[in-house]
Length: 294
Image 1: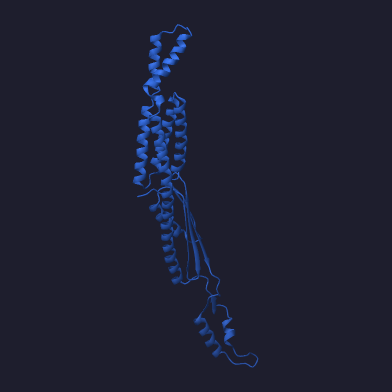
Image 2: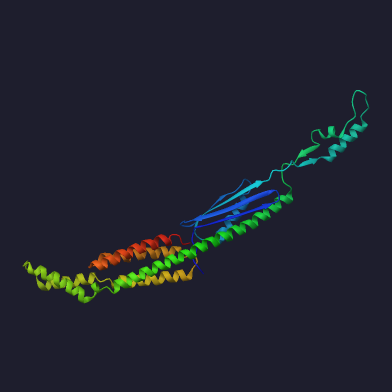
């Protein structure tokens, strides 16, 4: 199972009888799942169905779904009221003949109000077929949107994996840095103590030695290195697990930041400081990328 991004786009078009339609769905980053709909008048029920289907397939992201529905131009659909027409014909046959009034004609009878109506609504069969076709298009829309987010997630996983590798190399460099060995720390503190004693300030040598030991203890970064190693392993496990792991990766990004800051503050050598600053830079990039993970 792979991770998915919260960004994606899908578009499905089609025709149904005299109608043409276009479904669009676009998703971007979001703290939770927020589905917003733009549906034509009278199609609110289909919009709620879209919300329900996407809600089962997505867990995070702000998703906008829109439907454009147009009807092709066609000749007016006329409907003859045969009952009224038959009644008019019967009435004309019973009417007395007169030379002053000409015989009734069919075109004249058709002009009588109520004989011919212009159909304003679609036949039920057209409406039902349109509903079926839109339902199928909605299924395709949801599937292609999920596929787009997973494709984006696969590329995202490669970037995050590379960043974890960079962090691992920097942590290893900090662990193996000669400046943090007990001998190097002892020599550096001894040199500082010697300079202070040469100044003739009268400090107690034993007291200075105790303070130096405390400073060396506070400057030890082994705990930070161990925690960073554990966080890197946890992040890789989440990537392997896949699914909706964005929130947990975001939490790990915060932990990475804390440990990197502590490492920088404890660094007593310029080379360690450089490693810590580079690590902070990679952690910031990691945090930016995991913001896109579902």
